[in-house]
Image (cartoon, rainbow, N blue to C red; front, side):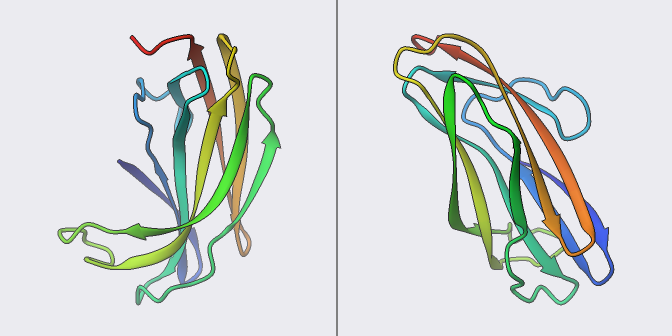
Length: 136
C-alpha cells in the first residue's frame, strides 16, 4: 500500500492507493491498474486525520473525470493503520474507498480522475485502467 500526505494545518489528507493487480505508478499519485471485465477492484482509500490521530470526517471525494468502460463507486470504509506506522499506529479511522467495476463486456483502456478535498487542501489522482476479458 502506498500512502502520501498533503499538509492542511493540523490535519493530513492521506491517500492510500491500492489495487489487486497494480502496475508501476505513472507520475506522483497517478496509478496504472488492470481489471477483468465485470470485476470490481479497489482503486484507493482516502482518509483525513489530525496529528493526535482523532477520527476526522473523511475528505470530500470528487470524481472529476468519469470512466467510460466502467463505473466508480465510493463506499464508507474503516482504514486500519499498521501497528508499526509512525503516524497513528494500530488505529482505525473513517475513510472513503474508491472502487472501479469494469463493464461486463468491456475491453481496452479506461481512465478516471478524482480529487480528495479536506479543508483548504486538495490532492488529485489519475487512474489509467486496462480492462481485459480475463485476468492473465
